[in-house]
Amino acid sequence: MKTLSIDCTDALADRLQNLVREGWVADEQQAIIEALRRFLDAHRPELIESQIRADVDWGLHGRD
Image (cartoon, rainbow, N blue to C red):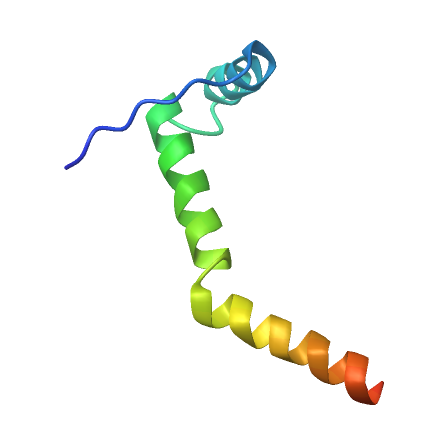
């Protein structure tokens, strides 16, 4: 397993701590890992490329 360290604003850290305190996640690490996984899943190169191609096609041909 790899260790990553981050710097974030106090506001983000407070929001994260509130989620832990309210029981939405077990700890800060779990929340950050889940957020990173979701971000990476949503930003896969092939997904982004297909969205760009669809936008270009719509721009050129105006079809939905």
